[in-house]
Image (tube, rainbow, N blue to C red; front, side, top):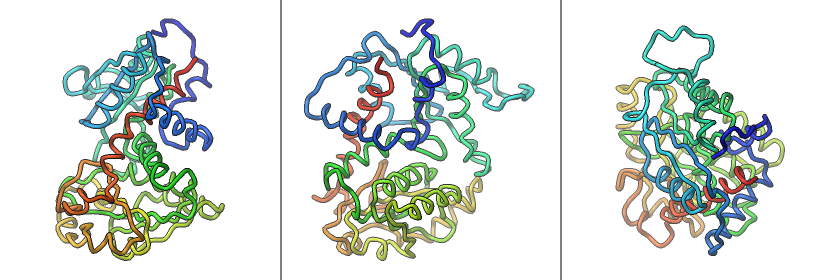
Length: 345
């Protein structure tokens, strides 16, 4: 436990809201540590320390892999679920709290910082207006008011933990130098699409790694404008390339990796009826063998959960070039590497 140990702003600066909060060299350090853990290295850097996990919505891989990571590093995880263990929290400053929220994040963060040595959070978006949710006010409020590192377990805009696992998987498949490797990021249909957080994080990380990225999605499923501006800025600075393709087949042509993911229409964000109507007419975006054959010995990636034979066919998902299970497995060592880096004394 950290007890009354002081944490200055530089310590709290180790919070991870988006992957670019870490420099390129520190991302490399996390991946190096992950490889050592996979090779059998054992570290107990969290001995006697606790990590609080706050879930405002469900999780399977993130919760399990992160709690196991803390345990294997010698620490203790404290799991709290918003549906059963605590109440609504207010993230906005200066408001009159006469609504559902019984406590402000600034107070909860201050209290938990005395109990835990780090706080990992999966916030719940409001789901009504993209321009509001994209601000990620909740996770940023936690990072502002906590005096221990805050780790984003997937917000509206970013999912840095999944991208660390994806980078390790790519590194294991193609080597450390990913420059010039062709990555097709392809939208897929789903009756329950998520936010584009995973795609946002993957897009920027792959460009920083020098990959040639092709992005394919139906009209109305454009990514966040601010993220796309940042992506184009990276390209203009010489980091990789970015092409938008009109179809999965075109994006996959010559690709080394086809990365499939469903995300909601930001154009119809908050309107479930319009979103469902739009998704119903996009079945041709399925990734099947004909798509994969367009690639250059292409591998298949997906962050899971996966709707079989709607997003991707069984033959692709279960085939020899699928990296999906490797991605999921790599959540554990990369999160151990991240915790080891952020919390070492």
